[in-house]
Length: 168
Image (cartoon, rainbow, N blue to C red):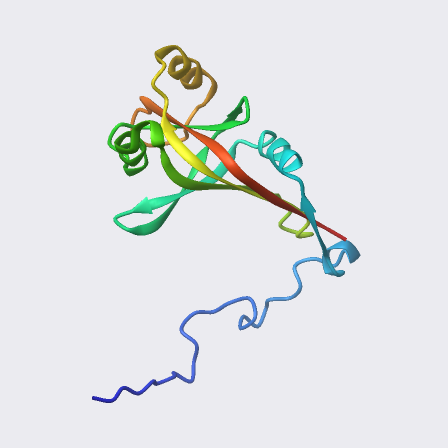
C-alpha cells in the first residue's frame, strides 16, 4: 500500500507570515532586537511564581499529557491549586496518596509586544490537601474563574524548579 502527500496550492490556515496585512506589530527597538536568555536559580524562579496567580498544570490523563490553565498560590514553597472531586487531576493525586503523582507546573509573564519577561517550570509531586483547615484557608484565598464548585485542593511540592528571563 502506498501513500502520497498532496499539498494544496492555497494554505488552509493563515498565519502572521501568510497574512498580507501582517506588518510587524511593534517598532520599539527593544521589541525587535536580539534577546538574551538568562537562566534563573530555583529560588529566583520560585519567587517569580509567587508573584503571579495564573499558570498551567501538566499531568497525565488516560496515558496522555493534559494541560489545564489554573490559578494558584504559593504556600511555604508549595504550589496550591483548587480543584473538584471529579477532576482527573484530583483523582490521580488521591489514588497515589502520600506518594503523590508527578506533575509539572508552568507560569510566565511575557510582554506580548516586546516579548520580554520570564517563564518558570516546577516539576514535583502532587498530593491532595487533607487538612480541612488548610482547605478552608485555600478556598478563601483562591477564587477560580469558572467550573464546578472547587471543593478540593492539591499541593505540588516542587523538586525541580527552572526558569528563564528574556531580556535585551
